[in-house]
Image (cartoon, rainbow, N blue to C red; front, side, top):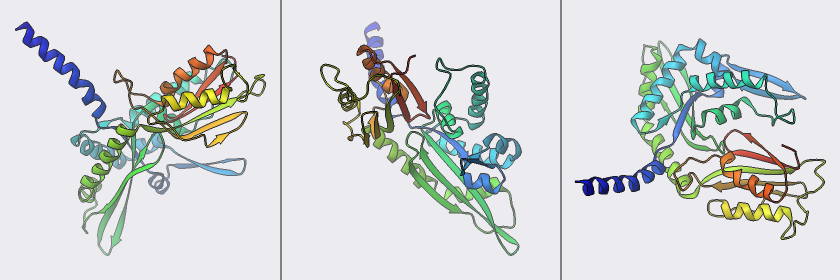
Length: 314
């Protein structure tokens, strides 16, 4: 009996990691900027003559019962397909807590890397995919129809990975959840198939991220500095080549003070099955730099962008 139980345990231990890696991605449903603008939840800001727009998701959830209902409906449909959910409202509350702590805490240098609200939400939520939703009613005489749009974004690269649009039949009623259900049902299978196909591809090839290496103004060295075995910049390139999933592209920008790797692929998980983000993946690089007496500071923007500044005291 003990041998049987031991055999079952060994088989389970060998199978579980493969299921962990093959699990469908986590998703977070959010209103699109177009919906936020139409409904008065998109704020405009001027910065040096450039207009930026920031969606106020918190206000949208508080003031639009329809939005909460639609998000709940899509969440239920995605769950039925096996996707894992990250709740938008809970994420926003976590961000409020983080911001409250940050207001009384500064880094050792007294500064931090600029991060947009969208990037902060990505980092805190850690959802693999964001699904943006938008809907609008069309009046045709006494009847109305609802058009519903969905767009999926990779939260690491912010690339579109799936999209679809559907329209309900003409009706006299205006019950949004019912019309959304009808509009979505016509394309939902195709939409989730696109998502699953994309996630299968990144499981095989790794996730795309951006890695920037910069040199502090008063560092006393740069990326052309000879480290004895090689130049510092080439040492970093070699590290990326050796640790990237399937190798890498050459840097999109390379100079004595900056290296930028765009579209470099990192593994999705560690050999032990732990999920990897860009910050975690670059930790060994920071360690390698420290072993070569190069001080550095690591900054993140969202899940998929890391900037390492060399020569900045910790």
